[in-house]
Amino acid sequence: EAQVTQNPRYLITVTGKKLTVTCSQNMNHEYMSWYRQDPGLGLRQIYYSMNVEVTDKGDVPEGYKVSRKEKRNFPLILESPSPNQTSLYFCASSLSIGGLSEQYFGPGTRLTVT
Amino acid sequence: GIQVEQSPPDLILQEGANSTLRCNFSDSVNNLQWFHQNPWGQLINLFYIPSGTKQNGRLSATTVATERYSLLYISSSQTTDSGVYFCAPWTVMLTFGGGTRLMVKP
Image (cartoon, rainbow over all chains, first blue to last red; front, side, top):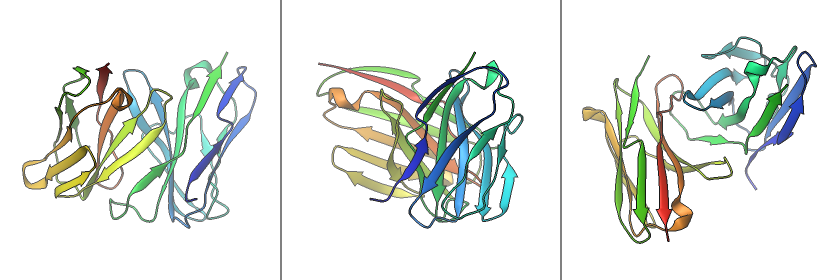
């Protein structure tokens, strides 16, 4: 089944404890991205990657890191999480960028930082 | 960047009713997607529609790119249609509107 998977789905952690949210897609998509969703602010893009070893900042990259060492994986790293990073996170992928193909979203990761 | 406005922000329907959700955007776009976010938070693709009309069961969507708007029609609504509906135009990236929160009552 073609899908985007994320792990963990739920995470409660403490301020300053490094964490990684994994994202994997099995559709051979070139383009992957991360979003966060917050009440009143909607969905905002954190980082995106147009291909292996190519990543760029989205609208809200502060406090996050990403890497794209393999085509199928695009982990999101929080080196020192803070309470303002409590959010619902989505990973997404598409065959190409700029609207030339449909973007598919993972199931989401609910992160709480205390 | 592009501005995306969705209306109405909230909508309550009785089961079986029809509705139209609107999405206005401020710039030319390459494409547009509609999503449904269910009560469990999952984002489900509904339509990928740069222009024209598409139908999928009780749902249909129309995008008029030259006039910078898109419409989502829901006919014979069901309680399972409840959730938030987002439109997201594509320019270089996908930009989400604020959503329409729909509640369908039995």
